Length: 295
Image: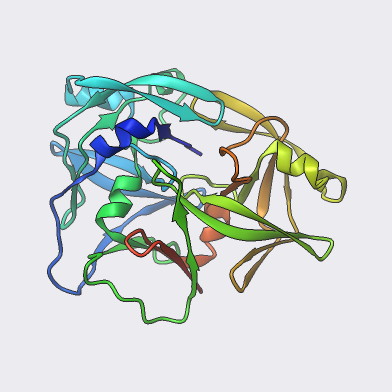
């Protein structure tokens, strides 16, 4: 789970340069790898093969420090990045083009998180975030192990999936949806971030967990979540039902934070790929909607 957030004043500078604008209705298909339910995209930078996590909760794309060294990139500034367990100042780089074959993505800046160098192993080469979802309507098909990239201008949805509206918080580009956690047949309505970079089904902040006494009726075990700034202690279990629009997701794997939260208030948590991999998911930032099609 990489919850990456930058200061709002910087976000306006990070809109992507759209190098692959489609003029027809045919989507671009990109094959992906599935790693713990999450999507990892094969891509190239300067002809160097890389694997990049697709993460809707990341507000600036990132590259591992070792990749920066391999590509001999020169820093052009820095940015402060907040994660689930703290924040870091990260160097930034310009002039990078991420090549996915037919589709290309050129963010204005890319960051490199220093603490990733201290990990025992390199889990991935980098992360593609919200700017990518701004450039394309992204259709994620976990079973087919592919994403399909549609032009926001030409995209029209005609299927029978559940269409769920979302909003962006001011100065942020992470989708926020309304959903309900149902415990003892009682729905608890709240707002959640959409986080395709998280392999959990749900991550719930300590205040929400304690206020609704969730761990008193739900079996759980000790666990940890890792992200920027370190790790946090959680209890891992499953809420009985997560209701998304008219869809009921039964027993999604859930991480209950013991302290703090994976999100800022008024949100109570985020929904990750442990839920979304059950559906074909379409994230349409232009129309502020997420569409879930059951398989």
